[in-house]
Image (cartoon, rainbow, N blue to C red; front, side):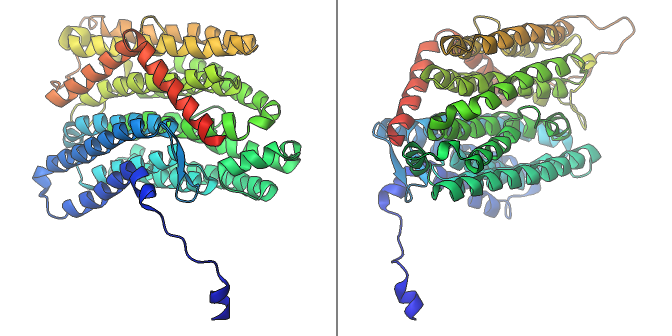
Length: 502
């Protein structure tokens, strides 16, 4: 009794905390609702669960948009463990949009593959909640909890094709390597806490600013291990070996969601930690980040050249894209952060669209995964082929697509920051990528060889066509009409996190 009396009074969250976390609470409530609804919805009407998921996502997106205008004066929530700023809301909006577009194309794909189970939609929401917590985390503990929540959901989704060995292999590889990466991440957090005495990011930044811990060897080891954990999640080399196998083995609708939303959430947390919290020790870790960016760009693009699987090619391409985004982190400037945020938005629209093409074109019991399967697509499904061509050109950095301006911003930041060699590496590897992107585009516009049967592509559903249209329009508009709008949004997000930390 005496021990209990000596404990400090239990703190409870305030009403403003709950209001600030409304998007996450809506998503979490939707997760529970879908688990309950799956008990009563017949197996033949599981499309109802997709509709309920879209309603939850629409409500969360609406609340996120409202919060954007309410977050002009950023603050922290739940005893400084979560951020309520435009930096986090920028990522939340992308994550929710990606989850919604993935949900739209999922029922048709899952039905054709014979794996349309109700828990799929609950797991999509569960992973999204983890990603949103990760994007808004202002504490090392919340970062870890967010990563674990999204990872556990994605482990299950990767093995969702329960009767396929390749899907089970993908889930097992992701689980084992993800477990090691989480352990490394957690050990790094322990060292950072041991050296600073804090788990909240603003307090860590203040402790580093007022002491000599920025050069403490144990602290630097902790920062390095933390970066390794993040690098695994964003598929940066040399921590990328799980990516091609998992992307190829997982159901394509899962790969569509995982390849985009996970990278957005993890990069948002990485930028918050390294570009702001650890900024006083920048000269100690920027060389490592730059090195990882270079080997990701080089390794990802070179490996992609040798592929004959579309999913594996896009997997290696995503590794290279992670390298380009890391340039914005390595140069440590406002323009670098803004460029990385813009690149994340451009990447989301483009990569989602590319994988959506594979998803909507999947036949019964198989994915459209080989280069030969794409041959002649333009003559049977011209709209789909044109969309895929736009996505490939954007990934390759051709103007006036979003991918071009994303690379332009991060390369400009590198040159402005005195890292011209880093920009040159980016330009050189972008030239390499043109080969394999154009190779796929030309195959789609090539007629099948004489005597070769054309692939039996399914007809594009209304939902699938809508997703392709939204992704293609987004890819073009982000690179033309909306470039200044998105740039200003990214700038506002960058200023918001800077205000919150100071």
